[in-house]
Image 1 (cartoon, one colour):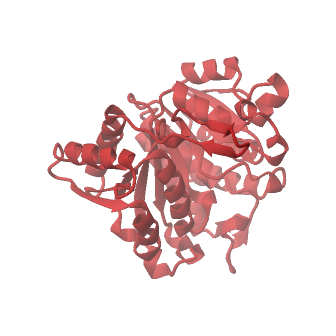
Image 2: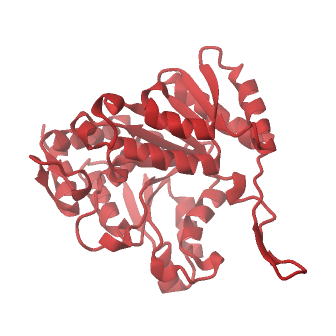
Length: 354
C-alpha cells in the first residue's frame, strides 16, 4: 500500500508527522512518500500543486493531507493561491464525496459550548458534495460595467448525475448507521436546490429502509445547535456542507478533533483534518494532532481496507483522552496539557499497549 503524504503549510507538517508516526506503529506494509503542496510548493516550485505532486497523488492508494494557506500568500493571483491545491486535487482525482463525522468523546462532552446533555452521545455524519456547486461553476469573475461600477459574480450549478451519485453515497452510509438521511438545500429560493431536492427524493425511493427528510439550510444551521442528535446522515451541496460541517465541529468542543475523507467512486480518497493551517500557532508544538490521526484511521478503513487497524487507532485515541491527555484547544482543569508531539507519542504508546 502506498500513501502520498502532502503536509502543506502552517501546522500541517506538525500534525501530519504525528499521524505518520501512528501509521508506522501499526506494523503494516505501507510505503510513504512526501511531496510539497500549497504555499510550500509555491515557494519551492512557483505552483501550489506541482505536476510531480499531482502525479504522486494519482499513483498512490490514498493521500494524507495537512493544511494549506497563510496570510503571506493573500496577495498572490487566485490561480497561485495555496488553496488552489486542494481544489485541484478534489477535481482532478474526482473526489466528489466528503465525509465529515462529528462525534463527541465522553471525556470531551464538557468541552463543547453547548450543554453536555445536548451533545453527549452525538454521532452524526455530514456528507458534502465536493466537486460541483458555486466553487466550480462557470462563469465567474469580477468585471467593470459601462458606468464604472465593479461587480463580482459566481455561478451555482449542479447536474442530475452529480446530485444522484452523492445521494447514493449518503443512503449507503446511512445503511451502516441509524438509517436516517436529512437532505439540506434552499429549495424555496434556488432553482439549483429545487433540482437537488427532486433528484434526492427520487434516489431515496431506491432505499425503502431509509427515512428521508428535507430541510432548508438556515433551519439546519439552527437545528444543529438546538437538537444535533436528531441527525444521522446529512447530505448537502458543496457550499452548504462547508459551512454546516464547520458549525458541527464546534459541537464536539474543538475543530482540532474532527477528521474528514474525500472519496472517489472506487473508494480512493484524500484524508485531512478539517481545521486550517493556523499559521499563528505553527511551529509552537501546540496544535492538536488528533483530527489528523483520526483522518489516518478513516484512510485505513475506507481506502486501504484495514478495518482492524483503523479500530486500533480510534481505540488508542479514546485511551489517551480517558487518561487525561489534552492539547491546549481541549484543555480542562484537572487534565494534563501536552503538546503536538507529546499527544502523538501518547497515541503511539497506547497502540503498543496490549
